[in-house]
Every structure is written in C-alpha cells, then in structure tokens.
Length: 213
Image (tube, rainbow, N blue to C red):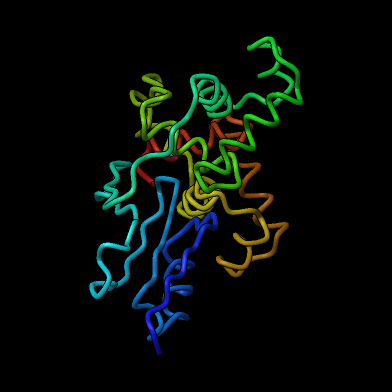
C-alpha cells in the first residue's frame, strides 16, 4: 500500500483509545499524523518512517509538561484566553458573559473557537490546557492540603476522578471500569461531596494538582 496521510482530530482522552486507533491503522500507519491538541494525552506509536509528519504530546512522568515535536501551539486571542481562564475556573456561559460584559451568544462563539483550535470537546480538556500553559495558576490551598484530602478518596474514587479529568463521561467510565452507570454516578457524588467541588473544571484542576494527570 502507498503512504497514507491520516489526521486524527478527535478529543482522544486516554492512551488506550489512541492505541486502539493507531493499531487499527496497521501497515497503513506509515503516514499517520496524530494531532492531539490538549495536554494530558499521550500517543505511543512507532512512526519512524515519517517522523516529520508526527505531531504528538508526550507527558513527563506524573506531570503536565508536554513536548510537541513539530506543531506550534494554536494562536488564541486575548479574549479567548480570558474566556478559557473563566471556563477553567468552573464558570458557565451566563456567568462568563456577565464577567466580560458580553452576550451569552458571544461567549458560546468564543467557547466553540477554543474547542476548534485546541481540538477538544469538553471542559476537562480546556481546563487541562489552561493549566499547562499557565493561563490559570494551580490553587495553593489545594497544593498544601493535597495529601490530606486525597486520603478521603478510595482507590476507586481516585480512578473515577482521573477518568473525569480526562474528559470521559459516565457511560464511558462505566464501560471502562465494568461497573453500572448508577455506580459511577454514586462515585462522582461521593468525590464531589468529599472534596467540596461540584463542577468538572474543579475536579480536573484537583486531579492535575494531585498528579493524576
């Protein structure tokens, strides 16, 4: 077969799904380009025949530092960066609109532009990106009490927290952990109650600070 130039522009949230897609390409993967626009995702594939075509983020162990081989970060306007920061803080469109004195429709447009430019489709992905590029600082109060608060979570709750921070929905998490959606709902409720955090952005920030991502 000839060289294939395939671009994957989906919100690939974890290594398992990346691996499944890469392996499914098989021999045609000589021209594979994996474009992952959000931190927290790593793609492990041997694409040496076309190394110049590969653009992937590889994480350093336990951290958010990412290395991009040949793709520059997307350009975000000052307004988009402002909206990104507010999304990462857990604000909804109506709250953001009030903060920046713009219409909800305008905020929705900025949010859509962010999703398009960063190749992500969920709040968790936007939050991880905001943290990785320094748009939003990691809360010091969490950094000081991480060890103590982490002890409140069971190993299963930590596992669910990590998947939530990767952008996975309850249905996917239930399938991944071989549990019912109702059980996953229960774990999420316990996590939010124990941490006092009630939005995905907050859970994602916590997971990053804890080193789960």
